[in-house]
Length: 118
Image 1 (cartoon, rainbow, N blue to C red):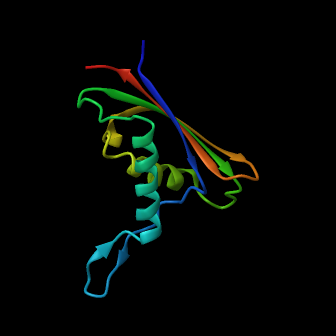
Image 2: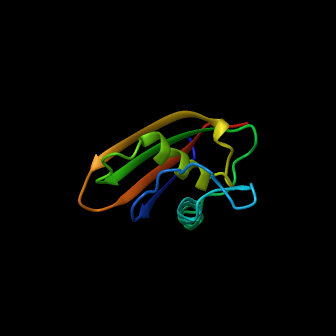
Image 3: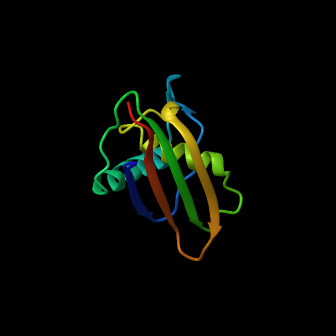
């Protein structure tokens, strides 16, 4: 049986923003993106998600509920996956299902499973 995790992230998902150039030429990720990635990480920890083995391959299903209009789904995914990078490297994801669903309430559902165990 494949091990899977499911959790819901309350609130509006944030699109991954481009890195910004600082005053002295250094680049940084905007705070809105960093805050959302930390938010995703916190919800994942609460669900009991633990780091996967290096050789495991991962499947993910993510649904973004709300009125996202112009937000690109790939940028919503990038920010969410980056929030999960503590648990697995996104190059381990071999199956991905994502959808934006029109809703008056904002939340994101995430299901993660091990496709192939090491």
